[in-house]
Each structure stands twice: as C-alpha cells, then as structure tokens.
Image (tube, rainbow, N blue to C red; front, side, top):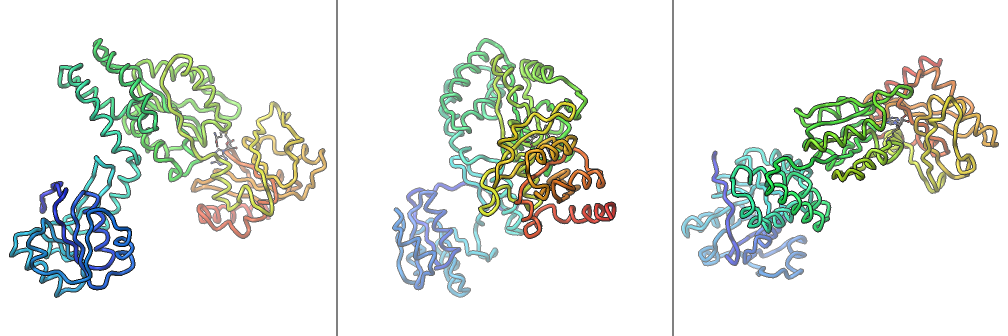
Length: 480
Ligand SMILES: C[S@@+](CC[C@H](N)C(=O)[O-])C[C@H]1O[C@@H](n2cnc3c(N)ncnc32)[C@H](O)[C@@H]1O
C-alpha cells in the first residue's frame, strides 16, 4: 500500500485553498462539508468560485489575493489549485517548512496526501484511491458504488447505531449478536428503513429481537417479487439488482433469460416455474404455496418475473397468499414489455400529434375467442399495446375490421423486444398477420396498434437498432 488511508477530523481547523477555478471550488466544498474553517485565496476567481463565495457559506472566508507564508503557517491542511506551477511550488515549499500537509492538484510528487473519489452517504463514507495512478478507475468504481447504495444508506447507519445498546444487552453471545446485526442491516429491518418506513422497521426490529431472545435463530424469511424488465439486463432497477444479489432461492419463469439469471447471487438455488402459452410447468396456486413454504423455512425468496410483476404478471395473486400467511414481502416494479419494446423500436406510445392515451390489453383469449372491451379499444387518437397477442392476431384484426376501423391503421410487432435478437415488423391491420407469419414471429411478441408506429421511420435509431437491422434484412429476404 503506497498511501495510508485515514479519515481526518478537520472540524473547526483551518484549511487553506488557493486557486480560482473548478478544482479549488471542489476542494473548498469538500472541506466545508467536513466542518473545516476554510480560507480561500485567489486574485481573480472564476465564475464557479465567485458563485460559491457569493452564497456566503458558513465557515468560508475569501480574499482576492495571493497566499503568503503566514497563511500557510497557521493552517492544518493546504490545497494548491492555482494551476500556476511557480505559485503552487512555492506553496508546497512553505508547507514543507511549516510542517503542514499539502496537496497540489494534479501534481502527484507535490502531494503529501491524495484526494480519493468518495461516495458520501454520511455518516457512511467510502473513499476510493488508485494511489494516484489512474483516477478514472476510481471514478468508475465510485459510480458503481453510487448505484449500489441507496441515497438514505447513511441514515440507516445512524438508525442502526441507535439500536446498538438494546441489541448488546439482549444478545450476550458475540457470534449470535453479529449474525443478528447482519440480518438487521441486510434484511427486512434495513429494507423497511430504506423504503422510508421507519415505524415498520422498528416494529420488525422488536419482533426479530424478541425471537432472538427466545433462542429462535432463523426468523421467518421474506419474498421479493421483482420485475426483471423485458430482457435487456441494463433495464433492471438498482433495487432489483440488490435483491437479486441477496436471494437464497430464485423462482423464475420463461421470460427471464440466462443473462438476467446470471446476475442472481451465484449460489442461490434456482427453481423454474415458467409457463409456455399452453403448457403450465407449475400451477399458479402451487407457486404461491411454494413461496410461502420457502419463506417459512427462513429463506430470502426471489420471485423474478418478466417485465413488471403487476402488469399481466399475476404478481397480485402470488402476494395475496403471502399477505394472508403474514410473510413479509416487497414488490419491485420492472419496465413493462410495451414500454421497453416501444422505446427500443423508436415508437413513442403517446405523442401530441398521434395519441393522447395508451391502452394495455391482453389478447390471451380462449381458443381464439377474444374477451375485449371493443368500445374502449377503438377510440381515436389512442395507442393499443397488446400483450400475448400473437396467437390471436388474426382474430384481433377481424375484431377491429368488424367495428369499422380502417384496415390501413398502422401496426408494429416486436419480437424479443430490448434483447440482442429483437425483431420489428411494421405494417397495417390488413397485412400484419401475413407478414408476421411469413417472418415466423414467435412469442414473446408485443403488438402496437396506432399511428405512433409511423414515427419509427424517424425515431427508430436508438438502442437495439444494430441487432435489429440484421434481423430486418433477413425478414425482407424471406418476404420477397
Ligand atoms: C404474461 S405477459 C407478461 C408481461 C410482463 N409482466 C410485462 O410487464 O411485460 C407476457 C407477454 O408480454 C409480452 N412480452 C414480454 N416480454 C417481451 C419482450 N421482450 N418482447 C416482446 N414482448 C414481450 C409478450 O406479449 C408476452 O406474451
């Protein structure tokens, strides 16, 4: 290790910052946020520093001049950020003579200490350093930590700190106490707190502490009903990813592919409960019962579903059973297939000139007989996003025709939306069934009906476009 990592208490101590640009402004802000008395000096401050000074933050004094040796001598820490080599060097020499710690921005050999990249969730602070070799790596790592830690993570530390004495006096055994702490931070109490439910977190804490005192080391588990989005792993939410990495067991279905599954904690048990359109691997009731059973064994159960769990996902039915049995659960929304497919195909679902509403429907009718509210479906200036519609596409088209909708109305069908093998077909109500048959479109496919589809010509350059272009060529070849 080339540097000694320490966190220094600078409260009410003088920190000198010289320089008038962005680097100086950042150093001033950081020193102020750590409680230092900051003295900033520069003969010609630039806009950012001027703005900072004019906000008159507490504990900041600013003078329009160069530093002197006396300024350095009574400082605790000195930052040089003048970007003037001679000035910064003089500052460094004075600091050495006065035995004051000094850091000259971007000049490693004129630094007694270096500035780490930080993730600030005070009182939790993560400092990352590459020992001055590759700051970009530190910044990249920082971005990763930022995504992993919810903004209120620091407050969780303060909340947990307030429970310390209760836990210490209730659980005498050191190892059991440590396990209790781990479950508290990384379990339902921590989750409830991070969700903004402090009262719920406290109630669950009391319950868990009571169980621990009764010698029950494995409290009841919990279930995470998580929306995995339509396929592209980049569309997972931070929370989904966090819970995926925490699960002991995962129940997943057909729409969750290997790329997403590979992000679940490596040693989590995997149970496939998927359904093909006419084939049920596991009955819905059995899935709910299994969720209950696994949670009652004390496990953290991840129920991973394609898209959003509450949009044609039967998520509501699964958690009804959990609620009835008093099993704690959390629901994490996901990007629903229509939103994902539309964005990746360059089709805005609403648009001032085309559609003022968007309707989500399922065409999962029994034996080709659709059970749809047609009066609502055929409204003008509306987009209709049809889930599970491929099998019944012809019946759907006939339904529109019978109710007088023009057969020239625009339609898009998106297969494997947002995935690397996404394919998009556009056409009209008149020809879309033939086109999808000729191109051999399969499930999962999303059907979008409405004039917004025309916008794809102009807007379909976004994500997924490259993979899609290759597939479109093959479709063109087949249909020619
Ligand atoms: C049982 S529904 C589940 C919907 C899911 N809960 C959601 O919010 O997207 C399955 C249907 O969603 C649509 N779907 C899901 N993922 C898709 C994808 N990647 N591309 C196209 N359609 C998709 C298809 O219409 C599929 O038949």
